[in-house]
Image (tube, rainbow over the protein chains, first blue to last red):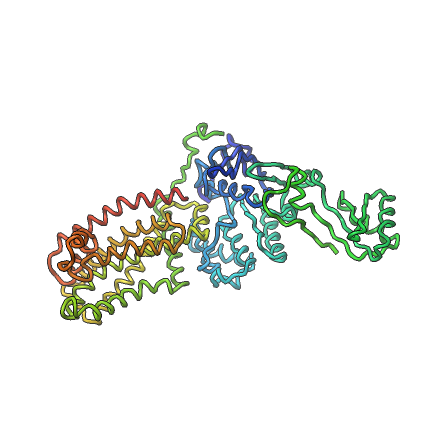
Length: 336
Length: 269
């Protein structure tokens, strides 16, 4: 594609697709961004985690050249958001809560339009639109106006629209907010596929579970400031990882079950109140080990599920105070 | 890492060429026209206003104003041509406002296209709508008895002049569209601007019976000049003065409001 020159090497390492240093954006008294630093390595997914109003969307808008920061520097694909907006726009794709498709136009027309605006020839734009409609299972609905699409179809069309120009860096701004679990999984599958094909992704989310599913690294922000960042595992160790919860067939056996597990070196606690046995999971094998131990000792298991620390718990652990926005209290992930 | 350390060659050198720009305007114009196709009701103003206004004024006021409906058609329809362009121009701001509201504009702004392409495409699509509306107005009026007393070229000139003036008003409409909060507000304020201009002019009635202050207003109202010019072009008669006034007004309005609209657009984008 035209316009993509080799990334100048005096600005950030070539291995960093996104480099943000000290970005500030104030709206009057409100400090939407108050000196944010973050880095997304090429070919990875960075999860930008934070409650409503933390500044996630403002940062995405700065990195998409939609708003200008008051201070700080940001480079995407080696291009400066301030001085090289046009080259930068060629390297990014945006799927946001805000950047949207035209509801009156059909899915096909939306994609064709964007293709033409990205300087594809009529023929190329047509082919690319058809290819992406096929890939996102929208071929059947291609001729219908986007306003008739379901929430999931609409989100898939948004994703397709952001991918027309084969962007090197994709911003996904809360891609699954408001979607039902099945549709959410469809979107996750697509994102994973894009990453598999080499895209670099900046993903904003309010959900710890989503970040864990998709991201390699996490940056947690609150009130315009980065309050933690690092690898998922690192952060999980910091805030505590998953907990396995076991519901026994016979609640009276809870103390005995905990004792057996403790004997084999697995830390387990139980609560007679909710009738659950809790085991902090320290590794992938541990779930199997717990079920194995309980099984061989003849305890009946009625159900198990694993629980992630919620965003609230992450915030509590990191900052010692609850998140500023409203977020769901716990994300549950049934495994049996 | 500061901008000062950048070599000049690293600045935003990918200026968008004329051909690419035209291609973008074309693609966006196509989008605007497809929107009309998807929402045919949005064409009602362009299709029905000329018909309703013609019927209403010719049959309700025609006899009273001019003594005969035939005379009134010859008097009023050319003026209506000009105000139709004005009416349509005002709807551009509404569309622009909704593009900002729905997030479509954000999508465009993350694409490597010139800022002006979005505005130019609005003008191009509006021109198509206006041309259709003018054609309907003239065809329908001819069915009611309008005589073209000059020639085809003069009629084209009247259409061109109305279009020129309408396109200068488009910039005002865009300014409103980008300054007001909702599409409804844009429509409301647009009506407030249009109504006095339209009726405080010589379009519907000769100004001689109006009070002095209103005569002064109508005299300087560009729509009066436009109505006079179109009358001259369709009925024959003196032209030079009124045509000059319309052209000057159009250029002045464009020269003042277009840069303001573009600046406003850049600021919001």
